Length: 288
Image (tube, rainbow, N blue to C red; front, side):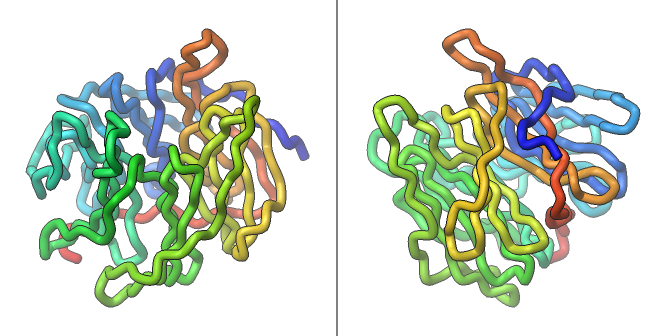
């Protein structure tokens, strides 16, 4: 089996992100954050749909009953099927001029978790939040760029990365309450003068292994549940942003990418066949 990703869609994203496999529809949903686009891609037929969104969109997930939940610059929104704003669920609790929502993930009970990014990288003002019918609640704070949100197969471990600090954390997660506690270091990456690959978005497989996109590193790492590096998979693009398992058997690993400022490949959607299936994407439940 190949160990290198191949381009499956030239999506031409400025900052591709937040891929999630929508099993009921048989499509991969992903976004272009600064390009303000919502993408849907059917890998079986090759059909690709793109809708404009009204502002910077950091993360997205399909919602039960139709449409999407999205973390945007102004707050957390419900969008309709074409990406139009339907209902604002919560304001951005931070300054939207400098901080916007970034990575996001639906938990096993249907809540939505999302962190923000401190765009000036000036003081670690980004936070980490949970949204459910009780409203928006801060789970943690003091970050620069929230990323890497993923759950262990039993839902009791929550992963989170702070990309510019080259660190991946894990928390104990309470499925009953949606609370995160006991933050500790899972993986710390040591950059070098020639390799600034750092942990961006992530996904988890059915064996509990954590797959982490290495932004500016042209690769995806697979870590075992104890944080040991098991394998590395190369991409032709310099800036992989987030992986997502998909396909009928959940054995295709898709990865979004960002444009390469140096002029190399970037902004497309890549895929890799894998031996171990991934955890399925979950629907946001407004009633949770």
